[in-house]
Amino acid sequence: MAQALNKMQGEVAMEKFYRKFGRRSQVTIPKEIVKELVMQEGDMLRVIKAGHAIILVPVKTVPKGALYFEPGNYTEVITDLDIKQAMTEAQAEYKAGKLKGYDDIDKLFEDLDIDIGNDNAKD
Image (tube, rainbow, N blue to C red; front, side, top):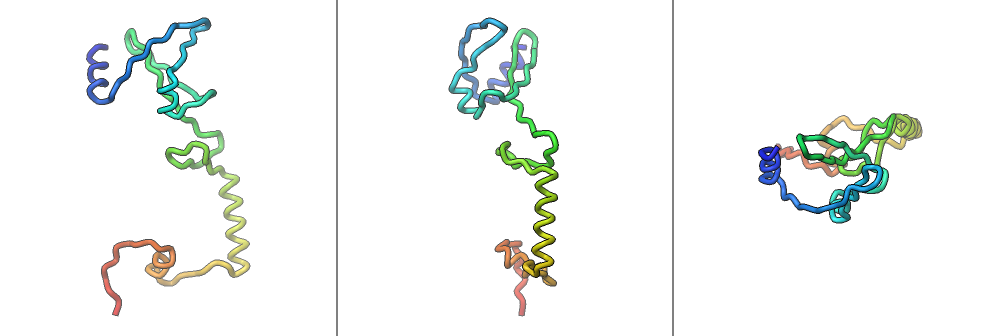
């Protein structure tokens, strides 16, 4: 266990705090840690027993039915329903003639203002 902690200390800056073990096995996490890890009431923690140590790891969950979430922003979740709604809106815009088609992929990237590093000059 000491070797694991020494290895962790070498890789990550560790801070030490002391807290009392309370009723119903509760421990208060220092506000500095809560703020730094952007934790809030109701967040899940994984509890790991490592020898005579306890490790708490914040766990970010993706809501049931979610297909995608923006990394680092767990409040923005795209669900199956969101995708279906976007597809319906896109089909309506297509039928109304509001969408532009492209025969040239370079023109598409140009209109989207995406530099693909194409150094080939057109004559």
